[in-house]
Length: 109
View 1 (spheres, rainbow, N blue to C red):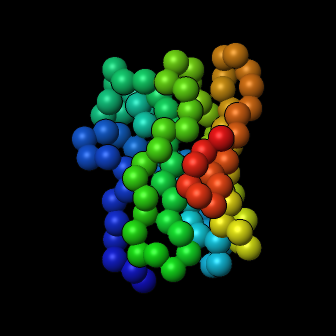
View 2: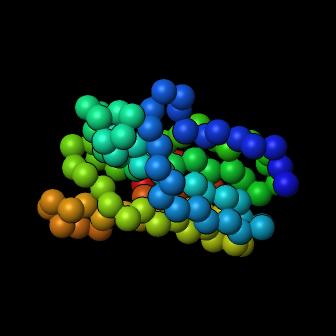
View 3: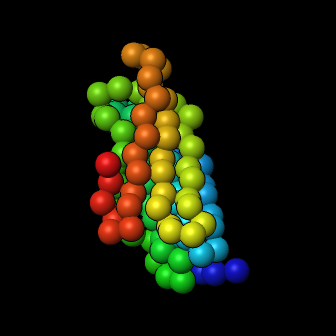
């Protein structure tokens, strides 16, 4: 077991959405914030944090969903060979599915 790490920002609520792990690819954690818990007036968003294979630290949280629409059912995936990761989630209104992909250089699309 590694040392416990908090990756969501302090002072904001966070509800685990999904986690994907690939030994040679890395780890992607998704969570929802603003779920009407401790942050009852904030927008609901999906955030992601990625840890490269062999690294002890997660990168800074990245907002991957739009703050004006309520996201649902986040799902994470990591390619075990390349480390390319993807966050997928749906929007309830309007009904749609969105995907955010993090490439090897760390940028999202």
